Amino acid sequence: MDNHAEELLPFYALDALTEEERELVEAYLAKHPEARAQVDEMRRAGSALPQSVSPVEPAPRTKAALMARIAADERARSSAQSQPSRRVNRYESFFRSFSLAAAALAIVWVVVLNVQVVRLRSEIAKLNSAFAAQSNSLNQIIQKLPQTTPSTTITVSLKGTKVEPNAQGQLIADPGSQSAVLVVTGLPPLEPGKTYQVWLIANAPVSAGLLTVDANGQGVLIITSQEAIGSFKSLGISVEPQGGSPQPTGDIVVLSDL
Amino acid sequence: MRSNDELTSSRLSDEVLVAQAARGNNAALEALYDRYASTVLGLTLKIVGDRAAAEDVLQETFWRVWKSADTYQPQRGSFTSWLFRIARNLAIDVYRRRNTRPQVIPDGDDAASVLEQTPDPNMDVAEQTQSAIKHKQVRSAMSSLSSVQKQVIEMAYFYGMTRQEIAEATGEALGTIHTRARLALQKLKEELERQKFEG
Image 1 (cartoon, rainbow over the protein chains, first blue to last red):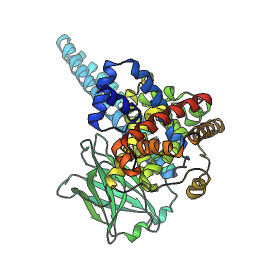
Image 2: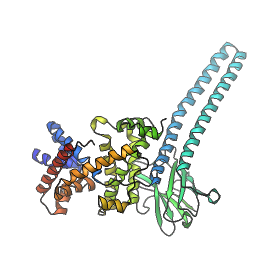
Image 3: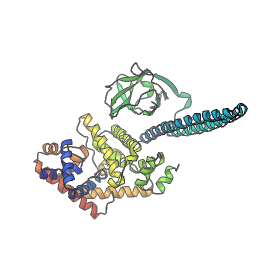
C-alpha cells in the first residue's frame, strides 16, 4: 500500500488525483512525515507551471466588472456594519430620557430635545458620508464604462418572473452600441455552486455574463455584446450551475422585453 | 485608502497586499490583479480554450481572492501558488462541464501573434521585467524536459487528467506514466533551483 501511495505523490503534488487516491496519500503522509518535504518540493515545481504559458492581456471590461462587483460588495459590508450602531443610539437615547425624567420633567424636555438634535446631526453626518461613498463608487463605475452619448442612452425597466416576483432592475444602454449596464435588486443570494446568468435574446439566448448579487440582493453587471444592444428583443436572467451554461437550464428569475 | 499607483510603485509584497485586501482594501486587490491577471488569463485560456470563458474564470478567480483573502496562510505556500490553484481549479471545472477537448493554444512566438499580446499598461516596468524573467526561467526549465515528460505533467496539471486517463490517452503503461511524472517534477525542480527561480 505504501509503494502505491509513493507512486501517487507526483500526481498529488500536481493536484491530479481522484478523491479516493488523495485520501490514501494523505493517510500515508500522516504516517510518514519525512515524505512531506518531498511532496512540498514537487508541489513548488508544479506551481511554476502556469508561468510556462504565455501571459495574455485581459480585456479592460474584465477588470471593470470585477471592480464594480467589489464596490457593490463594499457597499453591502458598510451597510451591514452601520445597522448595529443605529440600534445603540436608540437605546442610549431612550435610557437618557428615562433617567432624566425621574429627576425633573422640565429638564427632561430640554435634554431630550438636545439629544434629538445631536442624534439628528449625527444621522445627517452619516448620511452625508454614505452619500459621498456611494457617489464615489458610482463615479468609479461610470469612469470605467465605455463612453456613450447621453442623448441616445435609454433605460429599460426589468421585472422578476413568478419565481422571483420581488426582483426588478434597469438596463441602461445606447441601443446602437454593444455595451450596457445592468442593475438588479431583489434577487436572493444563491447557494454555493449556483450563479445567476444574464441572457440577451434575439432569436436564441446569448450569454451576456454572470451576475453576482450581494447580501442585499443587489447586483451590477457591465454587459458587452458582439451585436448592438438594440438588436435584441428581450433580456432574461436564469439560475445556472457555477461558471454558467451555454444555454439557459435553470429557473428564469427575470424576463422583460427591451 | 492608498491609491493603486502607490501600492504598485512601492513594490509591496504579495503577502502584504493580500493582507490589506483581507481588511477590505480594494486598491490592494487591484494591485494584485494588475500584477498577475495576464498570467492567470494565459493559464485559464490554455485550459478552457475559449477567450470569453477564460476571462470569466479570471474575474471569478480574483473575486474568490477578494472574498477569501483572510483564509490565505503564507506559511502554507506562496500567494501565487494559492492564486494559480484557484484559477486552475475553476478553469478545469469549466472545461469538464463543457465536456470537450481543450483547444491547444500554442505557446511562445506563435501564441504571441495569435493572442495579440501587449504589455499590461497597469503593470509598472519593474513588474513587467520581473514577470518576463520568471516566464523565461520556467520555459527554459520546461525545455529541459523530454517531450514525453512534459506531456505527462501538462496533461495532469493543465487538464486535471488522472494517471489512468493519461495512460489511456498516450497508450503507455501506468508504471511508465508514474516514472515520467516523478522524473519530470524532479528535473523541473532542479532546473528552477539552478536558475534561482523565485515563485
